Amino acid sequence: MLARCIFLALVAMVLPGGSGAGAQTYPNKPIRMVTSAPGGGTDFVTRLIAQGLTANLGKQIVVDNRPSGILIGDIVAKSAPDGYTMFLNGSAFWLQPFLQKNTPYDPVKDFTPITLTTKSPNILVVNPPLPVRSVKELIALAKARPGELNYGSSSAGTPTHLGAELFRQMTGINIVRVAYKGNGPALIALIAGEVQLMFANAASVSPHVKSGRLKALAVASIKPTALAPGLPTVASAGLPDFESSSTYGVFAPARMPRQLVDRINREMVKVLTRAEVKDRLFKAGMDVVASTPDELGSAMKSDMTRMEKVIRNAGISAGY
Image (cartoon, rainbow, N blue to C red; front, side, top):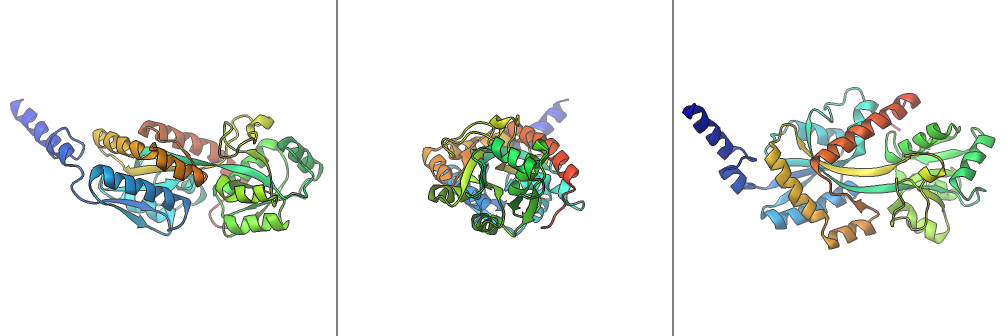
């Protein structure tokens, strides 16, 4: 018995999340944060967190940009659960297996949730000449003109696509998808009148709404948000619990020691809840969430359950 106790004590001292020397010395080398290509929302959030963590922990947080979410997930899933490799990505990461059969990771089994970071709600916008002023009027028009209204979206499975598809399925309307290679081209098409409506993130549409080039009908968050002041929610138009947003979270490899998970979570929450960080994210069209690890895990599983039905019912697969 004495030998077993000594052995367990030694293990606790060397594990990164243990209560001995390992916990006291973490981190003792640079930490890698893997994320998507430079310039996007995930890269922006990752770099803000990396900057704050570098100051908090006294070790460099290296941002490793990769071209695809599948590659990012595969890299981190195969890394050691020692707190030195993590990644930040959006909901497309955990919905990918529903869109592509050969996805090389399991979002639930292969990762340890760390924290929800931010949410950027989509806004339902229409081309100004469309004769509607509310979500209810849009639904009524679509039902009166089945198959005549088009919606713009970026690639399959993205929030702009799934938001419109969820709206279509919940309302029973017949609207036609027109796919573009990115949100930017889709918004240009909406402004030009090539399509009539779109679910697009708050940051990208706000300037166009202010200029009058687009008309905003509602925000797709559960509750009204200061990111879209004065706009009602889509849910308030008779679509209970309707939500469509770009959600970002931080994950690490599976089987990371809980003490280490909690330590990293606390440090990230400190960064995310700083006034200057919240202000920068708000100006970029994002609400800070800064959750517990368990809250991220629950949110991910809930979204997977909800959106799997939408994806299956529509027969959506990866690609444009």
